[in-house]
Length: 541
Image (cartoon, rainbow, N blue to C red; front, side, top):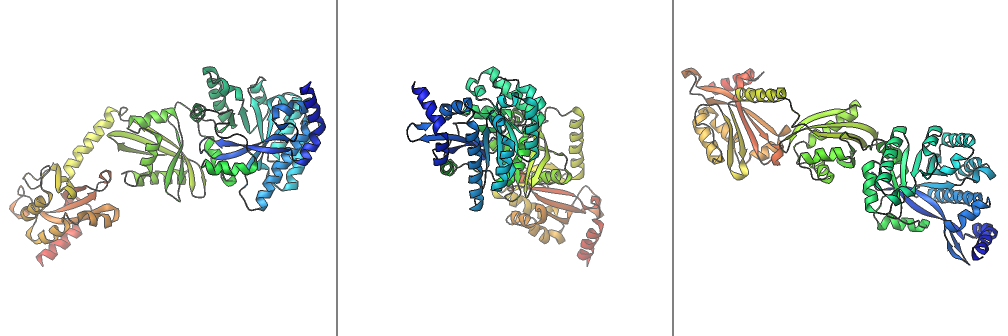
């Protein structure tokens, strides 16, 4: 009897409750999975009654639906959402997207589509700031009419969402008949969270991606739900894990207290484009955001296959990989930026190969979308060390031999530790330095025994270990180059001293603490003859 009395009370007091503000919208944030920001807020009715206290939707919605009165509530919720958005615009505040629910009977008792259009025009709110949620069961009834309604609403600029997808009707059939923007996976999938429900959700998300439909999972209550949805590429999440429905003023507190960003409307299409490429495939895939203003990369998504490849080269997490991408001390820092510029300018996949942690890596970037100075990139990093063919190995071996023929002497110099490592020495005499020799003493000996007397003063300044690093940092590209006559006792008497090119290069992987010293014949260098002649004439003059 108490239930009947309460139901009669709900019916008889609905208009009063709407008029006096006993019913008002609460908002539950909808989180974009790849960014963790609030992308949308769903408006949910709460009835704070002076007699019965707080009435939840389960208390009054069935009563209103049974008596064809729910249209009054749904119309009220729409106008309230629009009023709030209009007020925020007038106050110069950031306006967010609001999702509003519509019941099956709304479309029977009135022309709800025309009402929506009229109210949006009245409040002068952009149509893409309103999401229209229609339950799966609503789309079942009078399908031909609803197909036309949905089509016209989307044509007008609204986003239409199918609520309760998979709740018991022929959802897949309706995806064939309707063109929708978003499907909300029924709360029952996460409540069950069984192997079967997981596979259904995984398959549904992949199918929706292929159809160009966004996915939203409701009923997110646990961290394991979040991780699973991130893994399968679900676009958005909603549930008590993030927040209960809140009054408008408390939404601001939720955002501030939880350090949650509110997604600006102007960036929605940017991140929507990123969402479309978040796919849990068998191909290594990462989705990166590059911010040109801060010169930083941020992983929005990394699938399992990509994570396996990252671990194979020693990256323990996506955060560690992101750190490497952003580290100015990493040797490939500038090359990563050049690869990004190449992908953006050409609009096609840009590829580079490089060694990393003793592995050989293939990295590709492809631009998805660019807005202002931000770019969304798909990336794929593959450890190809084990896949190198014998032919590739032979090419590398031949290249190593060519380097040995090209250069007469190669050393790695370490001024900070006053040491040197001998990589190659073709002089045929002990004119270089052996591993861990005293660097400064070795350079002095080389200068006094191997360098032509007329060039020694100039060489001593060039090879000064105390200033070498500073001069390299100040030089273009971190390279110094000069030419000296070097003793070659294996040559004829009149050619004992030959002009040699000596190059000094900072080694990036050592955080610029070590220097590569390379010596080769100046005569083998294209275009160097005039320089050699000038030095020769100067010395003879």
